[in-house]
Amino acid sequence: MKTITAFVFLLLVTLSPAVATPVYSFSATVKPPSGAFSFFRVHRQGPGISLSWASASSSVVQFIIERSYDGEFFDVIGGMGCTGTNTHRFSDNDVFPGIIYYRVTAVKTDDTTESSAIETVRFVRRG
Image 1 (tube, rainbow, N blue to C red):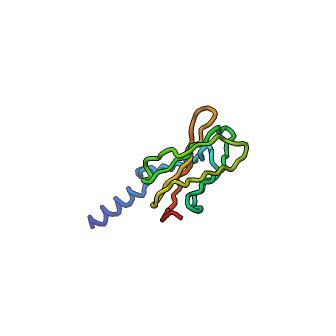
Image 2: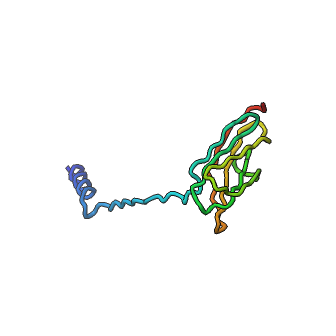
Image 3: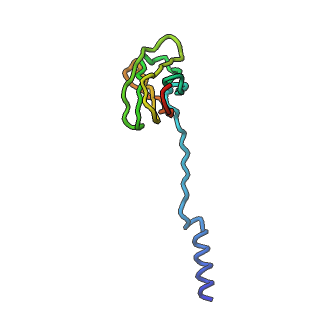
């Protein structure tokens, strides 16, 4: 009988709103990045790799194109000023077989930078 009484007491204490641990809920609104890029795509084209992207910000003055073979350390392989058009293209014809990682960094008028998402392409062989 003592076991049942203890069980009922513990059950009531656990379910009691005055004793129960309050549950907090948080809601956070995730703010998207300022968005220097509308899209960024990488694909094989002929003997090399073709990169294309669109600028979503009018404050971009320059693009820096970067490549990596390990996804961690990137080398600058080119750059271009921001033209009057929204869409930009770059061809990388000096690649070696393997998985290649690319990103584009936008340099803005206030000297801040914003990098695109990293895109990968598998390059099997030349030609």
